[in-house]
Amino acid sequence: MKNIFKLFKKNIIGIIGLSIFMFFVLVAIFADQLAPYDPMEIQFFAEGGVKRLLSPSMGHLLGTTYMGRDIFSQMVIGTRIAVLVGVISAVCVAFIGTNIGLIAGYFGGIVERILMGIVDVMYGIPFLPFALILVSVLGPGVQNVILAIVLITWRNSSRVIRAQVLSLKNRTFIEAAKLSGASDFRILYKHIAPNVVPVSLIYVSTSMASAIMSESSISFLGLGDPMQVSWGRILFTCYQSQAMFKAPWWVLPPGIAITLLVLSGYMMGRAFEEIANPKLRER
Image 1 (cartoon, one colour):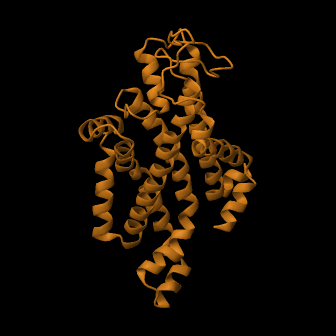
Image 2 (spheres, rainbow, N blue to C red):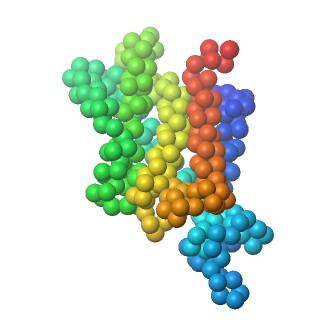
Image 3 (cartoon, rainbow, N blue to C red):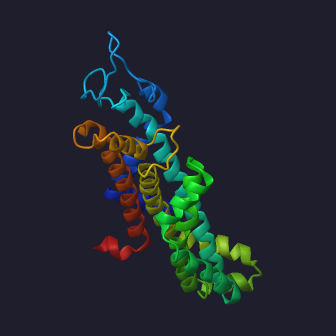
């Protein structure tokens, strides 16, 4: 594990991606201190009029919405949802996919056929319609969005991890571990799992990026929690107010933030891919 992060620190793309990601994490942690206003509070002029669609100024760094709400405050608070959904979804997806891949690849036989059969079924389910139906049935909420993402996207990592395990389980060091009396659990998680960690980390990074895009898409379609501010919800409100073109200060910040955070995930994934496949580093 130390070797993985030692190689990661030498990868400039990975470091840039990690820096961008950590910036958003810090914004999410200190969101209450950074946001100058309540994101849902309607701002008024001194004479009583609503500060409707104000362009960026010193008082409102990113302007205001059609309802007179401060966009900068919404962006800062919305960072929490993006980071929360991205991190939790990525960890759950990698955990489930890695374990299913390990078990299917190592035990083979009927266990492998059942688990890979489930994976094949999951591949037949389109993500966005499934997520929209699930969120519609269970109701809007971050936990339901995360559930929809995890239930579908674990399939991607399981197949790749299984292939890695198939290439490892007949190696000499695995045979030696079996002869020494090591249990299947010990062989799986002490001898095989460390060798697939770089591949698993690729899916942590890319799943985070996919989860952020998915949450933004679901919120943009109007199925996000109306009581919580998220970047996708900001875009939905802007579109609903028909201000996509006449108020660029409203639509551009969430679009740029989503792009940067998603890009950071793929940049970190690229770095872990180079660690898992040294030939890419040589190129």
